[in-house]
Picture 1 (cartoon, helix red, strand yellow):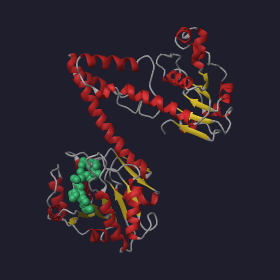
Picture 2 (cartoon, rainbow, N blue to C red):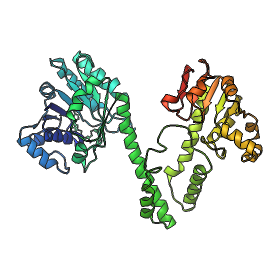
Picture 3 (cartoon, rainbow, N blue to C red):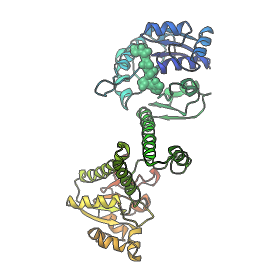
Picture 4 (cartoon, protein in one colour):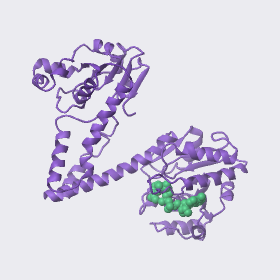
Length: 441
Ligand SMILES: NC(=O)c1ccc[n+]([C@@H]2O[C@H](COP(=O)([O-])OP(=O)(O)OC[C@H]3O[C@@H](n4cnc5c(N)ncnc54)[C@H](O)[C@@H]3O)[C@@H](O)[C@H]2O)c1
């Protein structure tokens, strides 16, 4: 099936989108306020330097599937779907400049007011979560006098192309993300992309807006990380390429979804110690590695968040489930759960603690010494009686995955507050508490 499409903004994203849609067999009208870009595209010349663009623009323009105009009204009237690809640059303060998005929304809204048939508006510009719902939709509705979801549809659809490989990225994306209020809005896009490979995710508008930022921030983080690793390797006389090749070949822990779910702070006998050792060595070498140095402060901030969430409840009796840094171990060294309890005791709260592994280890003697020597005041709060501990807490803090929602539900009453630090699986969360909250979800 062939669609008629207008693409607003003929920069990198817009001109690649326009050329690729035309290449896929659709009729495309590019729109820009810059008459030079419009004239170029309309005469079969690519407005940007990008691999394959000269060929795609020339052939699709010659076969009358690709044109361009400065007339936004005509473009909306002559097409079924409008893609918004205008720029969202930074202002001097770092704030996102949404003036182009706002202006193009006004133009499309005004054109919709005089259009009889329904229309789909697809925002592709990178915008912060909430922008489509708080800016684009209200402006479209105000200018058109129509209602989104009834008279026209809106979708947020992030773009993942990279300059230099933009055409092949467009035709072969990592995935397609479609954010909309309901399935009707994205039905035409599912058809439009039916021959494009990769998984399609239909989600909310806000989640789709956020996926784009999370992706870009993670890519930036990877580049910064790799460069700090290389810097450290070079100074230590280690071959960075060898290290990187071996490191990236681990697809179980290193290049994988491991450790990428929101949860609680890390701890234990390795990560904090090793981060400190590297940061110390870097300082000895006079190296500034701000990314590596900021990981422990970021982790501490997460413990602060847990303290704040518990204090905000205003309750005094806290039941803490989990004392070791993760389920299945009784190792208490640098456990953030221990840090959290110390902070809560310091705030004058009453805390009782349950951790099966720690209790067992204590009986067996393996961690008895640590508890007696380092945290005797916390050792005395430990009880092996899960039922009693859960029942006693006004706030029940889930600091371990060693309990199931069903187990907790046997003892929880609806007025108890549950604060989940470990991100129990959705299907395994307690249902009896009317006040469940995750620390960061
Ligand atoms: N460049 C990339 O590789 C890339 C990749 C993914 C996402 N993005 C995002 O996509 C958006 C567009 O990026 P870009 O690099 O293509 O921007 P760009 O600055 O290259 O192009 C934007 C175009 O929009 C035009 N424009 C501005 N107001 C207009 C209006 N009212 N009507 C019609 N056209 C108008 C401008 O004249 C310009 O040609 C940004 O939000 C960006 O963050 C960019």
